[in-house]
Image 1 (cartoon, rainbow, N blue to C red):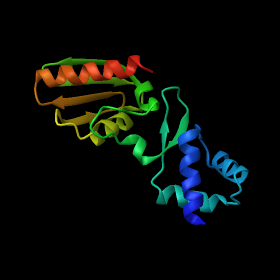
Image 2: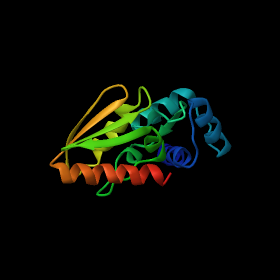
Image 3: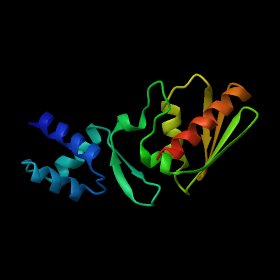
Length: 151
């Protein structure tokens, strides 16, 4: 029962932009799961579901795998929407985000485990991505521009 409920919860979060536990509870109940707020809260914690700020200033739940990327540079649209500008100089790429969103974007960048990226430092609305060399910085900046233009 618990496993089925948690699988349904992950499915609903990946399908809809759910921003409150009440909304999640209502959607679970629509799908035949009679749950309490305490149960949903516990499931959220166990599944490591996060709540992020979107580029539009609203919140939504996201699954941990949406923050991770694999070998390619793929973010969920909320993270890409959070980026305002991208530029680079020497081996550093600078990303400007909406206020308060730099850390979430930096976590997504760090989770990519890209060989070209040595690390990130995030402030409130600025991220400095240190790359191996100037060529890598250009490649990283170009990929972010492509991602931003494809949304």
